[in-house]
Image 1: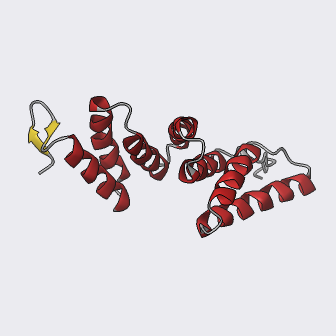
Image 2: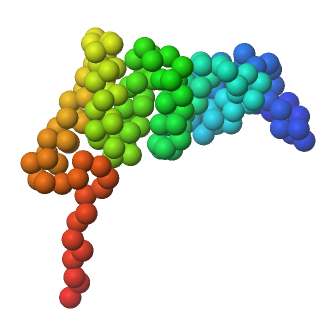
Length: 152
């Protein structure tokens, strides 16, 4: 059972158990439930870098890319050499169509951990997007404006 006192909304267990459950929830694909628990953890321990990483992952997985980018930014500021935080920030920026900024973060992640295939794959895809936009004369940020079709 997740909640011990429905009138208080306090989850069973202690902060460490909440953290462990929130990580398991993210890993199993239940990002929204993970967010509820990890916010409890952060209320008790706002400086927890591990909890912030779980929060960033859950935000990304729940398609809250702006918020995920904000949390991944905090993580990169705390630990500039954290390759996963750079990767997370890069893919969040990519989803936000901020391709140049995504390229910078993904490049750093790929250099820091060249064996991480997901880092190099994301980097290649962002580079390809930038190259295609340059060739087409399109902006390097934001959605592509497509002409509206007139319906007859």
